[in-house]
Length: 228
Image (cartoon, rainbow, N blue to C red; front, side, top):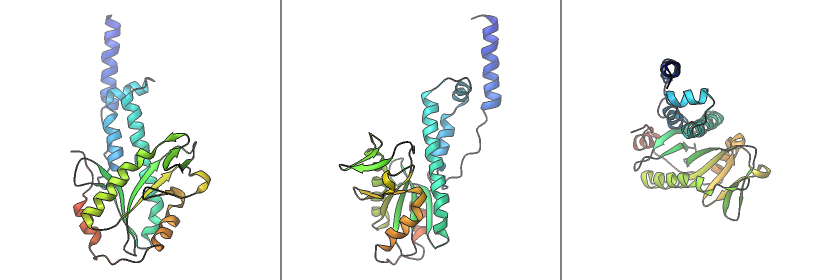
């Protein structure tokens, strides 16, 4: 390696450390999208960011982009659902399940005592999301597997809190013909109509009495998700 090239490499490394090596503030645990955004930040090491700045595509950068998009989608949905907070709904965000290293994106409690496990799904609006033949489709791609985490989370909440939660996938994207769907026990609704859809789903069920500290109990049993 020539002296000039060596100096350039060393200079680039120093620049990367000084300019890219200082991570931004990590999102506060227990806030919408916190763990996804933290993971994106973790994946974007100084070298990965340097490669991106130089126009070099890396697997880590692509994965970080997906995590960040998911985290931003969770933040967007939480912002939309803030309307329900004024009506007495309460939410917990980004909570760790008691076993394994997985989480649920959101847990909702309605004023009528119903519990919802919420899973925002950021999907490109370029292709519609639909249900056909017992499968979930994003355009022509079968994405049924993306409901598995939500179903697992609902089962964990049912066991942990002795409730029958409603699993709800909230699509940040485009549902085919602006429809709502049900698939394998999961309600699939559009983010821009999430408040109206949740009110309607809630009204379909008989009211349930919950202890006044139910959400405090849930918060203790489902702590904020943080990296181990």
